[in-house]
Image (tube, rainbow, N blue to C red; front, side, top):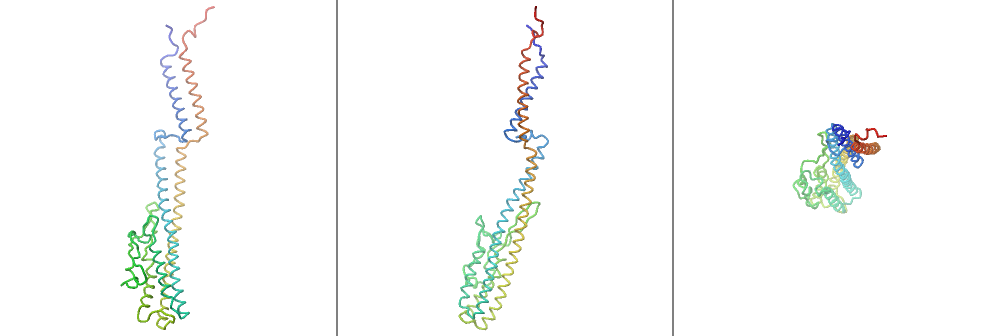
Length: 313
């Protein structure tokens, strides 16, 4: 029997080349279909550890951004509500001033009760999770525990009207830093409630009630309460301004974390994403190379010594 021209070593070389071409084609097909350099860490080679570190950094930035956004939403709500409380304190000042100017206090207590009701509603607001916004760590019970102005006036101390905790909510902004975003009902409402309580107790005392004519004793008292209402208004405006500073700071943090996340995600993309045009070209080249290798292998397997013997004349 006439032996084959191709030796065993040649066959092994051809087989190895054929398998390499097939592997290259499979890699190209995977890259084109997924858009990724590889779907395994082994396929990423020495870039795997860098890739994982970049992914982790991007995920951390996204987590900080998410929690900070919740804090921004809270600060935004607080801005509206603390400003409303400041307006209520100013409404009380105006009501007191008008009563003295008109020499008529007949509607003063009804106005005071309305201001109390609105302030209580604000201070007992809940967040999206159903927790009391101004309760601190004690956020499962209403921070204002009295139902009416008369209940407030009956307390030994205005501080007894508040059931909130003492720890204000903070948010982690990355890098081991936290920003205090929470506010407490007692910090916001004490001065306003004190003025309302004093007015209610005066009305029910020896120099009350406030009627259609203001007495000298009542006028003197109301003068002091105008100043108290102004002080409460100024304090609430200061707290609203401080809350606005926190809002702006946290908004800047979100912008920074977005930029950080985008940077690391771009780095990840540069490492793992393929250039699609290049990948398709490589796929076509690998297909051609594999077809050529298969054809050469098939041809060599058909070659025998007969191909090289001279033909007889």
